[in-house]
Amino acid sequence: MQPLQGFYYFCQVVEHGGFARAARALSIPKSRLSRHVASLESELNVRLLNRSTRRFAVTEVGQEVYRHALAMLAEADAAVEAVEFARAEPRGNLKVSCPVALAQSSLAQLLPEFLRSYPAVRLQLDATNRRVDILNEGFDAALRVRTQPSDEHGLVVRTMRHLEEFLVASPAHLARAPALATPAQLSEHATLGRATDFERHAWELSGPAGETVRAELTPRMVCLDFVVLRAAVLAGLGIALLPESVVRADLASGALVRVLPGWNAPQGILHVAFPSRRGMLPALRAFIDFLAERLPATL
Image 1 (tube, helix red, strand yellow):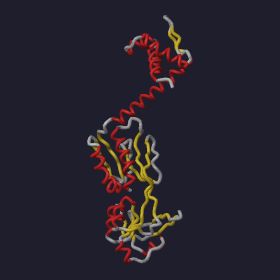
Image 2 (cartoon, helix red, strand yellow):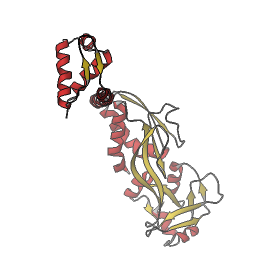
Image 3 (cartoon, helix red, strand yellow):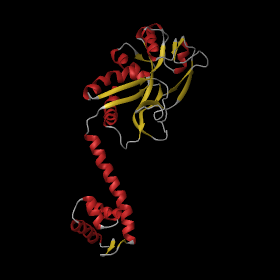
C-alpha cells in the first residue's frame, strides 16, 4: 500500500498551485517535495502533474487521485484523533440520565467505583423515568429500558442487556395464601400494582413455552414507585411484578421468592443512548465502556 506521506505532499502541491509555494508553506526544500511526488507517480505508474519552468497543471487522473487522497487524509486525521482521545485522561463534567429504579439499585453500587477510578471526572446524574431529550437538554448520555432501543436522529445506541420483571412475594405471604400454580389463580391473591389508579389493571405474562396470558387483577394497592412497592411486598402485603434489578438482592437473601417462576414479563432492553462516537470525550467513552463491562453483571 502506498504510504500516506506521498499523497500528503501531492495534495499540498495541488492546494498551493505549485512546488515552490508548497515548499515555502511546508518549510522544506523544493527538491525534496518534488522527489516525494515523483516517487508517488512512479509507484502509481501514472502522471499526476504536468510541470515545467512556466506551466503547472494537474492531469485528469491527478484530479481524481487528489479527490480520493483528501478523503484518505481526512480519515487518517480522524484515526489519529481517536487514538489521542483514547489515550487522554478522562476528565470534565458528565450529565447522564437514568431510570429511577436502575439508579437506586445497580448504579448506586457501581458509581463509587467509577468515580474512584476516574478522579478528574464529575458526574451529574438525573434519576428520572422521564424520556429526556439528549441533544436539546445537554445530556451526554441516557440509560434507558425500552421494548425497542431508541432510534432518535443523531444518536448512537449501545445495547447492554435484555431485562425482565418477576412475580415476587414474601415467604410469609405465601405461607398464608392459597396455593398458586397458574396465572389464572393470581386473582385469588392480594396483589400490588404499578399504576396510577385501579382501572383496568392486568399483567401480561410470558410462559415457559412462549405463550402469553393476560392476568386480570384487583390490586390492593397501586403505586408507580418501585421502592414503595418493594417495601409493601417485603411487608407481606401481596404479590407484585417488579424489575429484576429492584428485587435481585431480596431474592438472593431469601427475603422474597419468585412466584410462578416459569412466568415473567419482558421489561425491555437496557441500552445507553449518546451522540455520535466521532469526537467523543474520553470521560464519556470511559463511562460507557465501564457500564458495558460492569452493569450487566449486576443484573
